[in-house]
Amino acid sequence: MKIQKASPAPLGQGFKPHEPKHSPRRFDVGGITETIQRALAAAGLDTQSGPMKGVTDTIHQALSAAGLTQRSVTPSEQPRVTIEGASREVDAPYRDIDGIHAKPASRIDEPLPGAFLNRSFTNHAGTRNYMLYVPTSYTTESSEPVPAIVMLHGCRQSPDDFAAGTRMNALADQHGFLVIYPAQAANANGSRCWNWFRPEDQIRDSGEPSLIAGITREVASAYRIDARRIFVAGMSAGASMAVILGAMYPELYVAVGAHSGLPYGAAHDIPSAFSAMQGGAALPGPFQPPAATPSDRAEGSNGTPTIVFHGDSDRTVNARNADAIVEQVTVVGSDQQPLRANVQTGTAPGGRRYRRTDYLDHANQTVVEHWMVHGAGHAWSGGSPNGSFTDPTGPDASAEMIRFFFSQRRAV
Image (cartoon, one colour):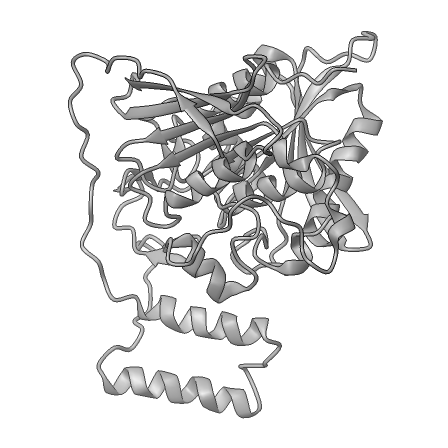
């Protein structure tokens, strides 16, 4: 990648550093036993009977001998909050964890005027439910097609939760677009994570990419959708799947929004996924399709315009992954002109500092925007406290994604 850097804009005035809140770590026996049993179940091993029951009983006895038995939870205690496989206890329902608002998610306090519909889609890869928000501005009488945005939630989230945290439905009312929220099935992943790390879920027309693309096409055929303005965005595991969709279906998705996610090809199983999330593995370079299926990648998918958000204090998904996403999209061939990088810094109204880097092509069109939010953890920047895993103090990722998406309208 050849980048020509422009001079940075001046820092915002009056900045006061925001220190993330830290909580003392506790030994989570319940999380350990739950993780072990989930891993065994994922491998198709019955932990409730037969030989494997003896294994789990032995583990429990060993913990008991060490004085680490799992105590029962009273109704007044708050449940553990699980973030992409990392469990932490929450003492109070409104407590922040590393700047992440961990309040139990709820619907938006006041229902919006549009219709929030529950749908289901089935193909050869299975069935997934999804929610569809149709703003009041959408009418069957009008002939003007409207944009659509696919929003992929993170682990331990749901469409309702993700809609509340991102405020995307309110933006849909404001700007007149439809929002599609596919829901991961619990029987596909116990933590409701999109399986971005499995080889079969990183291939065009296979697994979960085929399901999400199928949902998108179903909505596009049933509603008056502008095919030049269909976008996909996500948080964490959802962001990683959004990156896959942008690479596999560039003819369908005009641009990608990746918040706290990982690049294509960062992992091929659960151990490599955890390694990549922590930045411990060698991250991939420019996008390369699976060796056995070179035709599964559509031509030209490398340059799908992408906006990337990440917190530099994210201890769940290392911020190096954001750099790798940018690298995959901005790579140019030897016969192409280098991209120009324009760097700006500033402070969001909520107090978070950020660095924004725009990568522009020879026509002065932005190919990638990279937002690094200083001091932020694994949370949706500028999100609402009505949803889980949001950081209200950061720049508004939802509004910035909409602005970026709408600037990327594809030519007929």
